[in-house]
Image (cartoon, rainbow, N blue to C red; front, side, top):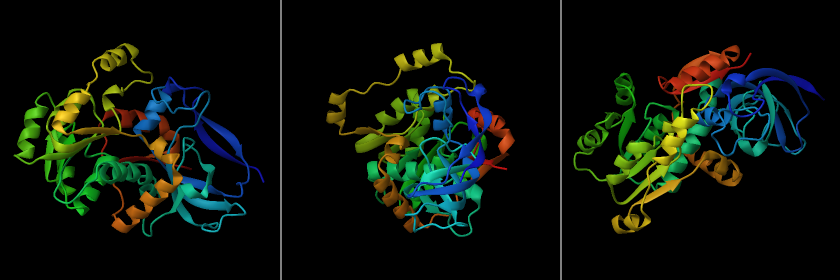
Length: 341
């Protein structure tokens, strides 16, 4: 059986302005695959970096961006027992998510929690996996620890705070605008900082003598350095992004990127030994290639019984480019979602 779906496709990485809508055929799912009619798509910084050619995992040649989605099962392969036609699901994919339909191995799908909308489902998998892996798998988070969470009003930041509070941690969130502080208060952050030239002093005030045990770092530059310098002995910094390399244009500003790369923070391993501090990094593509670990984390997330993620902005399918540009602006809170036709 062959059907047709719509998708957004990049002819090659480098200029997100060349993203275009295409119609393509979709075959019957393989024996371990599920065919999903996609209802909602979540945007991620990795999507932007991939389209601009700044993400090492980006496919060569034409590709469809997108890492997470939700939708309804249409067909299942012969060896699929967990899902059936009509089931509501959410899932991750190694690119290919900007589409109205796809075939995906069943191990990358989860049931949409009861009561959740498709928009909420598409806002969860990538952010939740990132936050959990950073906090618990790498960060070894325990009750009473102090956690600094950058981009605190974004999808990862909000979920990370909810998870950290469940674990009994003290959380401090950072944002780029004072307008986002009321959201942090409503989400239960214990402290908050607007990132500016006086960030180090503001962090000292927010800590108020508390040890800084864990940092979820996704900013880079001086913010990275100032956070690392305040880590307590046995403190860990988990790096999962570097927003300073992101721009608001369709194409990268290579001159600016080279300058930022050459002036990037550098850590002396000897000093790490002397101060007993650690820096650890990861990206979700690595986790995607370890499906069993991903399944285990999703199981742990279910036991947390988290409320639905915050959907901050919703766009229609034909508004994909506008959604991406707004996402780049830094003005968003929560998750940016695209609804399919």
